[in-house]
Amino acid sequence: MAVDISPRFLFKRIKHSVCFFIQRRNHVKTKWAGTRAKRPATDLALQHFDATYSLQLGDLWPSVRIGMLSEKKYGALVNNFASTSDVISGFHSKGCRDFISAALTEKPAVEPELHDHSAAPVSSNIQCFVFPRGDISRFKSARPDSNGLLNYYLLDAASVLPVLALDVQPGHSVLDLCAGPGGKTLALLQTQVVRFLWANDLSGPRTVRLHRTLQSYLPRELLMEGTVHVTSLDGRQWRNKEDTGFDKVLVDVPCTTDRHSLMEEENNIFKRSRTKERQMLPLLQMELLLAGIHAARPGGDVLYSTCSLSQLQNECVVQQAVSLAQQEMGVRVEVQSLCSFVQLFSHTFHFAPQPAVGELVLPHLCANFGPIYMCKLRRMS
Ligand SMILES: C[S@@+](CC[C@H](N)C(=O)[O-])C[C@H]1O[C@@H](n2cnc3c(N)ncnc32)[C@H](O)[C@@H]1O
Picture 1 (spheres, rainbow, N blue to C red):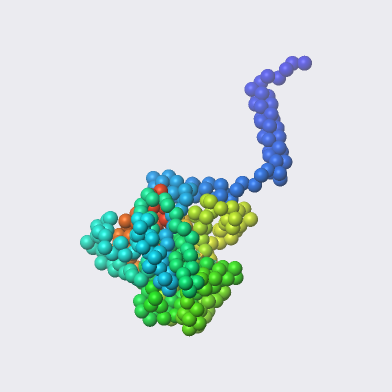
Picture 2 (picture 1 turned 60 degrees about the horizontal axis):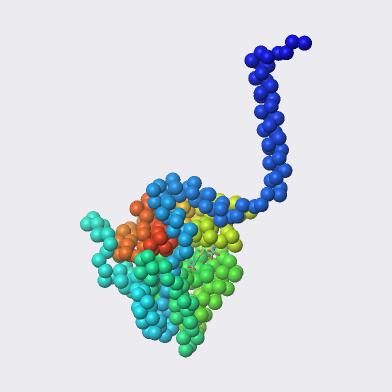
């Protein structure tokens, strides 16, 4: 029998072998899939960030990436309700400085632009100490004073910036829509000028932590006199509530908490089981921001913040909410410039070069704070 070696026949044989090989390979892979080790959520987060942030941040991404994968730097928010003179002199002796009062006395690292007339307000009662640039020393845990109140609260120093940008003035009423575990609530109260503060968080356990924070840092009399009101509600409900007319509203939304997602498996939103929840975040964030805008009085300010670098969760949410506020609520909202504010703090933090709206603190090995995104909005009508 003659052997068919025509090109057509050979091509068929090769095609058959390749198909068989692919089928075998897929067959084996399917078998493995059930038993293969799950990829850590931290790996999935890094893969996702590499894909999106390298496009978003370009040449800046490698340095931000190293910062986020390294130990973060803390700030010590001084508790003005406790005895703190020893603590403050201790901070000074270690070379730490209050980055807020320092900003008011130092020359800005970047000269203000001549055309920028935006205000650079600073609630001067807030004190937050940090170690100098490049110094990666850690703060000791806070200790109770003679009245049992803790003398400072450790937090990412950049997370004080949204509170400072809100610029709370004497007699203001403030709504902290997503408040747990209470770092920014505590910073708001350190201004010592708030007339009334409503701190809310949807999560029961986070609200318990919020209560615990307030009890550990505030005198019992202040808690009893009704200055602070704590609830555990879905913040989105504020769109239908009559408790509105706040002078200032902080909307510090749930987000991909980028640093946490890169470092911790526990409660990691990049777990495959939480994919849907993660994809729905921008919608939830926008609904919370719209609720915050609804809760503010005309002329009042809303501060939107996240601890993510994601444009989808930052600028896109703000831009979408501003246009929906007009379309659906008939409310005009204006984005407020934070340029001077950023220049004031550019000795301490690295800011991203001009996001479309708002400001973004970028992690950096020499000043490993953030990421923190913030955008200040004024409700005009
Ligand atoms: C970034 S954290 C807030 C951190 C807090 N502001 C602080 O400085 O300690 C976001 C919070 O939003 C809460 N949250 C999530 N969905 C919410 C909702 N629909 N309404 C109100 N709070 C919500 C979460 O429980 C979480 O505590």
